[in-house]
Amino acid sequence: MQKLGEYQPPEIWSWESESGGAWANINRPIAGATHEKALPVGKHPLQLYSLATPNGVKVTVMLEELLQAGVAEAEYDAHLIKIGDGDQFGSGFVDLNPNSKIPVLLDRSTEPDTRIFESGSILLYLADRFSKFIPSAPAGRVECLNWLFWQMGSAPYLGGGFGHFYKYAPVKIEYCIDRFAMETKRQLDVLDRRLADNAFLAGEEYSIADIAVWPWYGQLVLNVVYEASEFLQTDDYTHVNRWAESIASRPAVQRGRIVNKTSGPLHEQLHERHDASDFELRTQDKLASSD
Ligand SMILES: N[C@@H](CCC(=O)N[C@@H](CS)C(=O)NCC(=O)O)C(=O)O
Image (cartoon, rainbow, N blue to C red; front, top):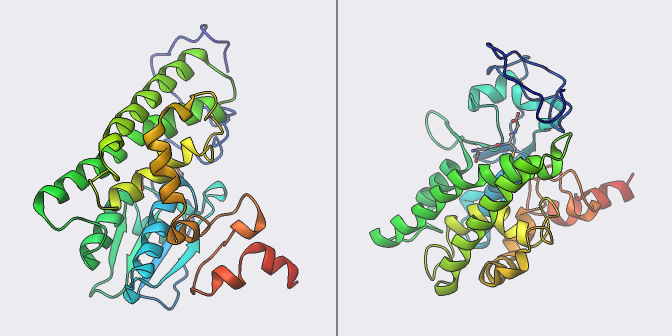
């Protein structure tokens, strides 16, 4: 790597595989599978292949919310995909998501099976399938989708922009951190203004818009992602904080956020979820004590 300010792009970019960034080992300029590997399949119609990053948590929260709401058909198996080990480049995974990113859902109750990738697409699929967590009136539905798609377009500036340069890049680059801190604060202000007059993003009803936005922006103000709440002064966004705390206290969110989690306290790590009882019996603290 060159010193800051000294880099001049060459005529043709070439892949420097050891950039030194936190995720350098899995970043590649090409798509497709790197190895043959079939995915495991559990007993439920819904098979989730994921990891508890904010994008993964959206789907496990949604599935737990559906179950909490009494939708028994939302029972699911959540298989762990270790992206740091390159599981997303296995042939079975790539067959389900050619973009090689978690989360991926396979619905085996349809003929043929339905693959769903992109977390927003998964949330919308589940909401429509079970008529839950999406307003039924056209105006409410559109507002819900407005915020769902807002999240899909905005969070890469928070994650790939701010989070990357603040936490993961091998050097702290003021220009990059400034640029994305500014955009992140602007986005928090967008949310704060919306939530000043509305309990939830789509209005008075908790919906897939909140389920998509909370793991990123809710967990940012709760200081769970990037440990940047002081740096960004996130306490200033009082309405976002009120909304984030109310969602964090939901039982389904407390369950969903620990599914496929491989870091943090052991009682908050449920590596795989195949049954509702796993929350009681199979978190890492329980598995360790039964060894
Ligand atoms: N827009 C996608 C983003 C998914 C995504 O970026 N997933 C990350 C983890 S948060 C991933 O699988 N990264 C692995 C890789 O880039 O190789 C979605 O919302 O589903």
